Image (cartoon, rainbow, N blue to C red; front, side, top):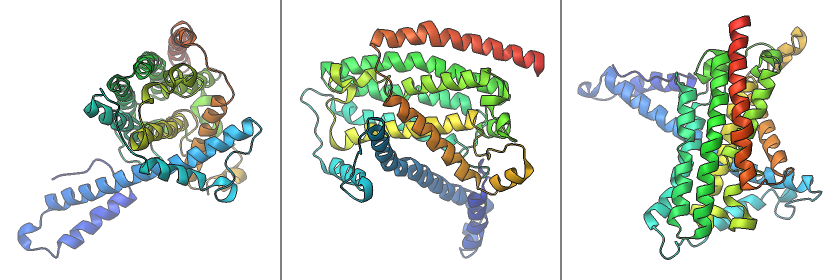
Amino acid sequence: MFVPSVTNPIGDFVRNLVPQVTAYLPVAFQSETLDSVVAFLINAVICIIAVCAVNIGSAPILIYMERKVCAHVQCRLGPMRLGWHGTIQTIADVLKMLFKEVYAPSGADKLMFYTAPMIVLIAPFMVCALIPFSKDLVVADVSMGIPLIIAVNGFGVLGILLGGWSSNNKYSLLGALRSGAQIISYEISFAMILLFVVMISGSTNLMDITMSQQGTVFDWWIFKIPVLGFIAFILFFISSTAEMNRAPFDIAEAEQELTGGYHTEYNGTPFAMFYLAEYIALVTNSALATTCFLGGFHAPCIGIAAVDNVLNMVPGLVWFFGKVFFMIWCYMMVRWTFVRPRVDQLMDFEWKFLLPVNLVLLVTGAGWIALLG
């Protein structure tokens, strides 16, 4: 019999409902296998809608949030005219972008030119499907979650390389090459930090990693291993910022040098897809940091029963998104606080500092586990 691998309350409800509906079909069409397949397909559609709702729905919110954070860091007001405090400004910008004319420059490889933005969107969507938002809300609870995330994240750079190469523009090509070098380099540190989390938690499954942090805030991996956990969190923050091409590590699209970099020639909907991919990656990396270091969907209990009981009354989904938006705020503050380094300084920082520190962190973490369990 066909058995779906993912279970949750919504999925269980669908699996119980489908046999009741198919009971009205002719006897020749009734079978347990058919019920399982239909239930699985319905659950798959629900999961796709949920992932799209989380990612695409959060993008306008994050664009508005970024503008306001940027404005307040620079002692400005940001959007104020459309809606209350400019809340409708993002909707107006999205509509404008969707209705703009879409065209490719002469000499461009149009197939690759229009395929590249879709490739860039694949990685963050797939990572989002692996994140446990609460104890019962996870799309794909796979046993090899961390290795799959490492593999999928490396796939996103292909879209950037194709977009820059197919644009027939020297600035786009240079931005794509810079991005390829940067993302591939920082992907090494990103993967090593995730492997550190796997090593200390004893599992590659994201749900198991989350459950290993159950208890108080001192059971979160950022605090559970003194000093090492905090260092790993900071290294994750730096490498994920570079891996997302966000400032101050946005060398691939530096306006002063490359007039926009790999997406210089993009406009309208294809440009919106690149823009959307950046914000979806911001959500997924924040969710990954929350899952690996900040206790996931667990409440920030402090060990006092009266307080912990109140905190545990709040649904885990609320705690999870609270931590995710805190991480997003941190990424935005870094973007609008630090200056952009030169491309040679950026690469030196990875190969001469981050990589050696990550190697030392792995060895130290292994020694900690061997000595103290």
